[in-house]
Image 1 (cartoon, rainbow, N blue to C red):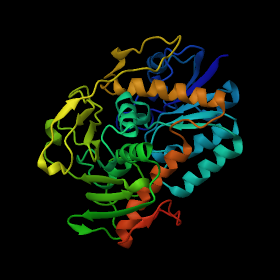
Image 2: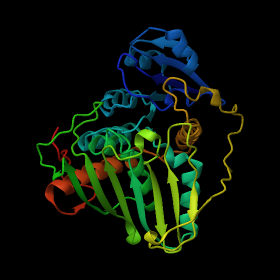
Image 3: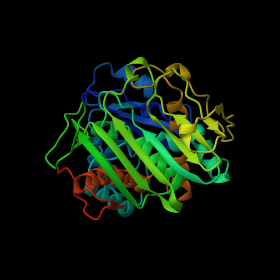
Length: 384
């Protein structure tokens, strides 16, 4: 049975680099990309060649009415661009593959959950670490006891010129979601968020490079409590030394009673980031030695064409192979979840939980106390 896919990638809205969602379905068997939606018709032949779409539409809802796709791909990295097409897709009974963050507003996230449940659709959010072999290997090693009892997960954003609030929303989304993937949703969060050396106030706002919703702070340190005593740390500081020299600040390391696992998160071709293991027991300050962890891919994609890595580095496709690989397994998971009537591994509920963590960090910092997650107050702590 053929799966009909439509791509919404509106180039009339300039934005920072995308993550190759528009080519995620390329080369898969029994898949037809029936439509490419872009209100900007400039160079449309070139754009459609990239997505391998059959037809071009200027308007998303017109496309839905005429094409009746099974799945739509929402490529915008701006969280405010997602609710309207998700609602339209849901009302047409159409499943969704959506760029992260799903939304910047917990009330809107709740409404998206209601739409998904009401119309019986599946929504997969592009948190690629959940589908990446190194992080899947990390999860398996933790669950197998290879580092003993997990104690603390240390996560960082890119800590570049966006360090603080924007980093939390744009890149912390990955790290927080990954911690929840490894250890389940957290029970509570404590946080210290500063701007220019002082604790943030409710009226503080950071000027952001992209429209990501309310943001504040240039220095964030947060601690999440997971089940079984695991603590998760997230940190982002603006302009840390080394970022401009190609040092990878972003990533996750998990310390256990019998060792540690470390995996950076890089969207550039170099340096090539690898999953590494230390067999040294904590405390980490006493020094650690790392070794590379061999990765063995056991997942199969029967009938699929090999991934075209020559696409890496082209516009809106990161140089690192990681995204093409993870996106393929994400959309395969979405299609299988539809067939099996289950939730995708990265789904509307996990995406909402990640936003609860982000808003929980702000709420904890403003109230100067530990906050229970999920938050009872669904208004954004920084206001709309």
